Amino acid sequence: MRALVDQTRGGTGFTLIELIVVLVVTAIVAAVALPSLASASTTRRAIGANQMVRDLAYARERAISTGTRTWVVFSTTTNSYSVLQENPASPGRVGAIALDDPANPGRTYVQYFGTGDFVTVSLQSVSIGTGSEVGFDWIGKPYDSTSVALTSAGVVTLVGGKTVTIQPITGLATTP
Image (cartoon, rainbow, N blue to C red; front, side, top):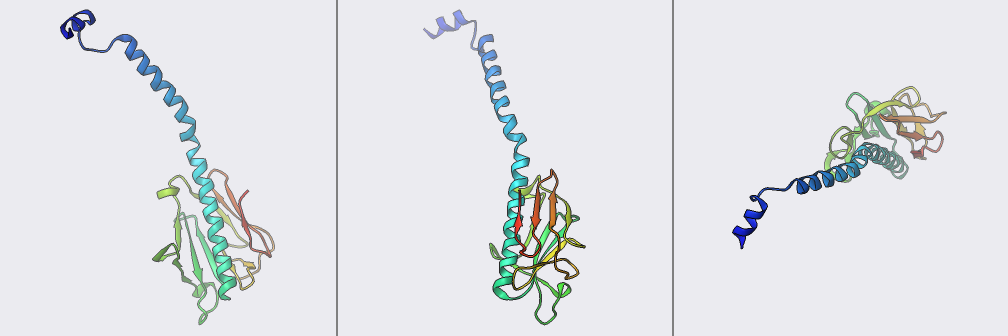
């Protein structure tokens, strides 16, 4: 029976109809997947901004709970930010030391963009008072790098337009 099927079909290859069906199905899958891939960068930026809001909230709450000023230092050069705590023996931003990351004991609290989960995320600009760092005091009030209380909102902008805003007086961080 098998020999009869092979003779009527002309061999064991694919028919033109089968090849066309495979091409049509592949085209449909590609058309459906392409918008999802295009929005992945937007989603990563949103997740990066949300992570930054959580880390700023952590720094603020830590300053309130310990009574020691906590700093978040942004670097567009290294595409990262760090969370630091003032040294009580040497007050001020200059004497601040890196905190351990509570999620990764033994590692300093540094968040890098452009790698891992944040591969397509980059810091575009940082405008916090006169610099690129913010400190929170024992009541959560935000200060710029010269230890002057913020009178206007600090803004961190990610490439693609996603922003994180740090409110003056309260120090609350938000993302629209």
